[in-house]
Image (tube, rainbow, N blue to C red; front, side, top):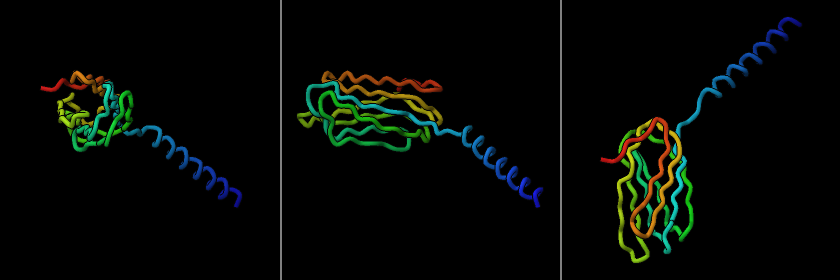
Length: 129
């Protein structure tokens, strides 16, 4: 009887250790994204498209930041669309992303239309064509 208890305890402990070891080896690849309004007026209807999906922001006040995390499924270019305070539509093609990349992205939207995409992913991304 004692031997059976010991066998069950060792078996349960071994199973838990194997489960934790398997979980430690797995992690999801994602891109932590921040959209920043560097302009003097509120931006409206901001949409960020990435391969296989997109996310949106209803409005972003001057100096405000919006954080979002996404997983890349597929490959292709990013796109940014938004409206300025005069309801003029703007669009821009961003960097190309590939499934399996992970890292950070900051999109700084400024009033001069010279938006800055700061992408730090592994493996490295390619420039839009």
